[in-house]
Length: 109
View 1 (cartoon, rainbow, N blue to C red):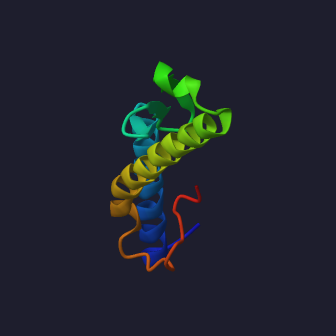
View 2: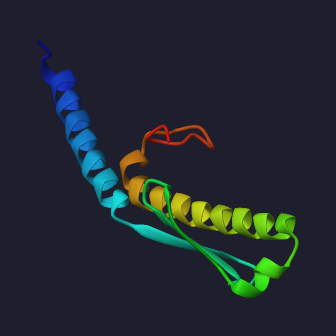
């Protein structure tokens, strides 16, 4: 179907796609921990970003519900930032040389 350089490029693209799929599968096994309030609230997210655990120090529960909610949200945001960093590091080798615009996330997540 394709000849010469185009065929070689298609083979390379397929190889990169397979490597990315393997890297994404490895990401799903990872876990990140997010904290807020100097460890008063801790959350654990899996590599897909799903929350697996929320631990709230009992002393925080005596605070106003709004404060507890803000601490939980902050811990989740912390974990998401760590997860995004890990994703960028693991996927960075695949996107080198592609000249993607700033802020563009690949693979489209």
